[in-house]
Length: 318
Image 1 (cartoon, rainbow, N blue to C red):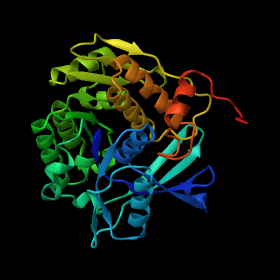
Image 2: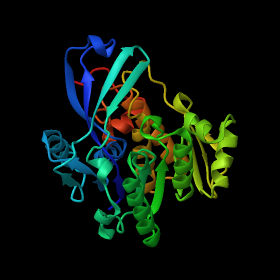
Image 3: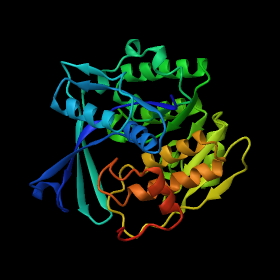
Image 4: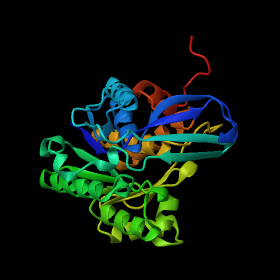
């Protein structure tokens, strides 16, 4: 297995028109979750990915499992819950460049995940374990499950990749979020923070200063996301370097860009690319996803990704 990831995916209701949610009368149902987005992104690029989660024994769970399995992701370690529902969330395209998200995930099936349900075999054969700061915010039992996952990974030579993916709404308070996100970052080999997440953890600094602060936590490789400006990378073998981003004429839906970035970076590393080249690919993936409505719908295959990076995508293909 190339990459294993653990986390909650929810039924996503996307409005069919722009404006405030109170004026919306029709929605399209999709699926969204940071970890499954990464797994799907990797699968579309030809890698073997596994997503671990828990779903309600309901129609949303049935549809989601079918969709993610259909994308080529291994779902053999997904469990079902008869007493807790699959979570849902809504997007609101209030106006251009103003997208809001509303979660209804309290006491969801995924929040009930437990360490005792996680088998060593689910992780020990993976090259990478991908985790985010969302899962530990769901419940204490989810944190225990991640601790076990990290223990299995470290015992089997699986490298740990951590995306802070800060979602303050799911934490009890800001200090709890700060404490646990720093903890999981410090246990990882690679971290993928954004500027706003770094500021939340360390206060106002420059990107270079943030990178050093992450290194001070004991992290070897830091990949700081800088939005449209690209990324800043640094590791024990790579000096601090800025990697350029890609220009997008119109952002349709920014949600999921960070997950696409993670998938692009991991794909590059799995392909044996140098860190800078892998991050450039991640920047391209993140840009491409913002041009399509939906969390996973804009994730490209290899040929589309190569065309975008080469600047050869046509307006119309005949």
